[in-house]
Image 1 (tube, rainbow, N blue to C red):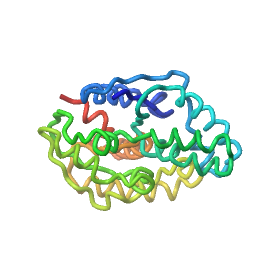
Image 2 (image 1 turned 180 degrees about the horizontal axis):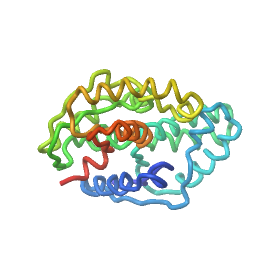
Image 3 (image 1 turned 90 degrees about the vertical axis):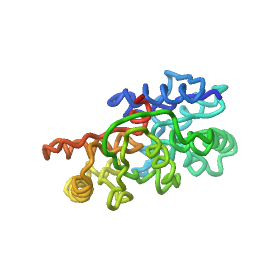
Image 4 (image 1 turned 60 degrees about the horizontal axis):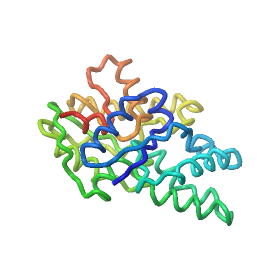
Amino acid sequence: MKVSLFVTCLVDQLWTSVGTSSVEVLRRVGCEVEFDQRQTCCAQPAYNTGYLKEARPVAQRFISIFEESKADAIVSPSGSCTAMVHHYPQLFAGDPEWLPRAQAVAAKTHELSSFLIRVLKIEDVGASWKGRLTWHDACHGLRDLNIKSEPRTLIRNVRGAEFVELEHADACCGFGGTFSVKYPEISVAILDQKIDAIERAGVDAVVSGDASCLMQIGGRLSRKGSKVRTMHLAELLSHK
């Protein structure tokens, strides 16, 4: 199967190993991967902040670029950005030109763990990693895309890894995009509940499917002097 990688802004600019790990995993399971370097933002920041007019031209550029691809699927290592693409039909509701184009691109776009489990029907990618792991459910992946069992299944099949279910794993980490900037005190209060749960779990690493959540959690763990590391699911699955 041919796959077009939608890498996301945060991965491209701040956490590139997530992108390269995604490519490695996809190739390992037999996919041909392409990457269009023209891709930019999916319009999520503007859309989530209520600037729908400003979000549309950004989304139109995304649609125009990815609809040129001959790939069978568009795959992204981000639940939030994938969810944004799935919101494109709402963004272009009533637009006779852009609505069908938005629907077509949205139908082809998948989050990484969902693609592996639901589309490829692969539960074991041949990964190995020694240590205790837990999983944080990122809000968009869980609530917009209904991704819950998929990453847990993949983690449980990582050789050498011991999976520990996190207390209140589905609770927000406090990031919420611009929320953490507008309401930093509330954001940190929410985050500290997550940090306390991670520390009680006694794990070596916390894994998630969104770089934004991991940066939020990792930054606070570092400031608290914790030895727990943050790891994107793609990075974990790329280990052999």
